Length: 125
Image: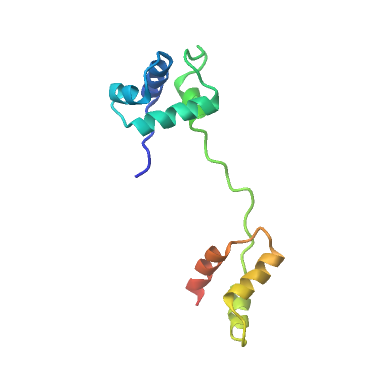
């Protein structure tokens, strides 16, 4: 089960209690959450450079955005293999899916890895 995200009110409380010297276990008991969630929140705060006391201009939305930034979009679209050609090539003697994948990767170095290549091919078969 994925870790739950703390509310901004609890995040502020975790930062305040951490600055006062309480351990992650003690903070977890106070805010009624798991110790691992508190530790993850503190790691995020450290990575984002957020320390207690918080700046006055840091509102709830800005704090949440600094601790939980949106995920980065995929850099590039991977080129799809020509599965019609692959199907035809596999009919030839001595040709394997792995050999065809190696040719695909030689032509498209940023293409799919072998397991994903096979997963995409499987519905076609």
